[in-house]
Image 1 (cartoon, rainbow, N blue to C red):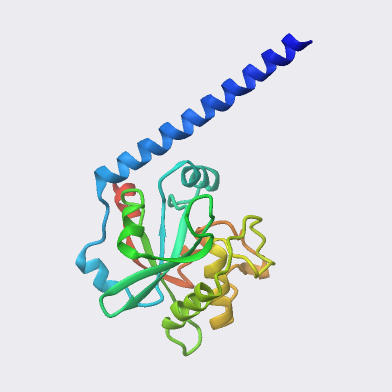
Image 2 (image 1 turned 90 degrees about the horizontal axis):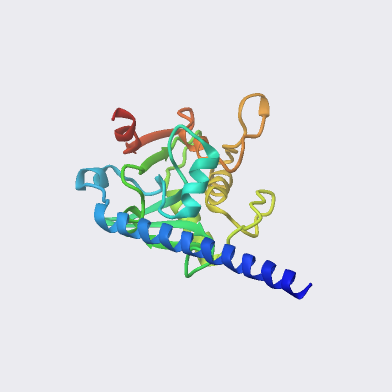
Length: 219
């Protein structure tokens, strides 16, 4: 019986070690690819961006790739954030799990580093089209409000709980609070899948300002 347990233990250790080596190799390859491409936005593209715009991307790493694989959307997207523009200074506010970041939940980051951490030709910048007389800077102001509140990441992905936010939930909540527009309500008042990114590609609610994904589709 002891030999059986020993064999099972060795097998489990071997599986765990193999899985760890796979993740290590995967992340190493992602970092090498990120360093090689040095992805960025042009000055003309930066000039197009306004305060309160939304940026979407396909990030590096196994988690981002799994999200893209599972969603199978028109564009390969795994993350989103709100852009805050102050004169020529660009930052973003987004929500990230502590398993992927040194900070858990809503946090800020320089736009340049956010783009550099995105897979090549994956960036899409969109602009919300308000139905009321209120400019889009309200989006960035509300994002800064949640940043100050240090809202933690919603690991349960429960959109009915506003004490925690995952990335798309932050965007949904900001637009709902500031404009009274539930962007997850589609035709016949049916609720859309709250984990998908194509909600933000609805041309009735958003304009696409920058679209690098089209480069991949033209190849």
